[in-house]
Length: 157
Image 1 (cartoon, rainbow, N blue to C red):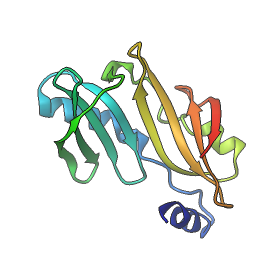
Image 2 (image 1 turned 135 degrees about the vertical axis):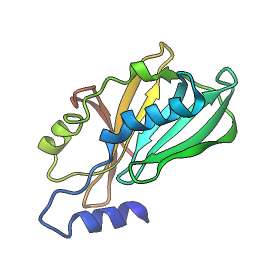
Image 3 (image 1 turned 45 degrees about the horizontal axis):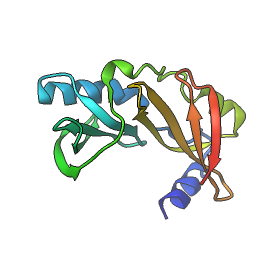
Image 4 (image 1 turned 180 degrees about the vertical axis):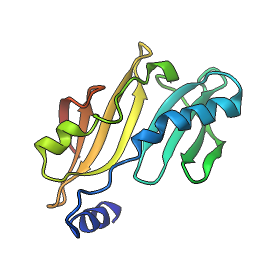
């Protein structure tokens, strides 16, 4: 189980656990938009500790293409994933502060294991931010975050 492995790795040292590479999201967006040549609409952008994933809305948001980005390897060319629907957003709706987004999580929880961070669209074209957090005892929380890291809600998974 991936969550258990991350928790065990995170508890093994004195340092705080690694966090998703949210500081690479702007570069991932720039790479996607350079690939397509025009600004895009996204269903989701997510980050793990290794990569940024992008789900791009295509064909008038009736289909999706999925790709990834790493600082080492650049953009994985987005591949079609089939029909899709849902709310989308543009790059200018992504306004979170990557330097502060996990600050309150870190202060409220003792060395939280943040598995991923996701940005999703709303019907109005704005975005919501969330983080999946694992606890040492095996629980998983989905934490809704504001753009500067304020905790807006928590749901057990």
